[in-house]
Amino acid sequence: MTATLDLFDDGGDEPACLPLGEGAMVLRRFALPDEDGLLSAVQQVTAQAPLRHMVTPGGFTMSVAMTNCGDLGWVTDRTGYRYDRLDPESGRPWPRLPEAFLRLATRAAAQAGFDGFVPDACLLNRYEPGTRLSLHQDRNERDYGQPIVSVSLGIPAVFLFGGATRSHKAQRVPLAHGDVVVWGGPARLHYHGVLPLKEAGHPLTGRCRINLTFRKAG
Ligand code: SIN
Ligand code: FE2
Image (cartoon, rainbow, N blue to C red; front, side):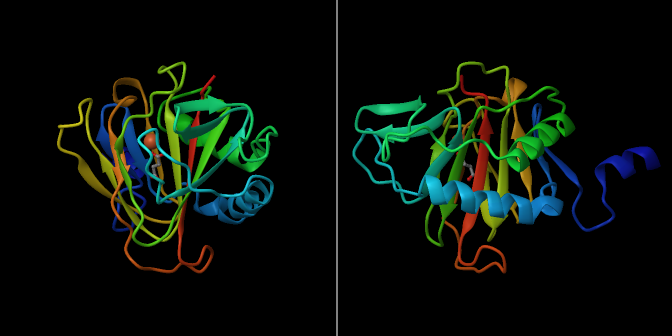
């Protein structure tokens, strides 16, 4: 009994691991000890590949600003969604995946039961108050046997985590600075999104939320 409690309860108000269903969970504050290293790596990446507002195939400009690092970067434009080795803005390869990113993503995946996760792509999202990400699946990756690892930094957000179909009712999961969500296995293609962010500030990021989503894309 106490062993189970120790594993899933950090003694605070929230459990350290919140299951969202088979194959999906929130690791509360998992990234907190690494916040400085992660945020300085974010600075390095965005200095080389600036955040930008991409356009969807339907012609809408996304409210969330995005960039990438790693061998592959997720991009959208009028021709569709895809992974590309080159940043279309600069024509150069995306910045390398920082060591601090790689270590955290592999550790979080292992903690969630996915050993040996080595991402080759990291989508970096910046949300300002009022911005949102509508319900979608991550399905441009080659191997659905590999999980998605998603790290939240900065101001809070409400993550929507649904099911295998768009109509499945989504759970509303509040996410705070340092929280990590992992989904894979039977949950790998589950719909997810982010509700419009409320006005807020954070001492390390200011008026925004930074989300890092790690994938094995190629
Ligand atoms: C995503 O689905 O790419 C991002 C999810 C998030 O910002 O939490
Ligand atoms: Fe996604």
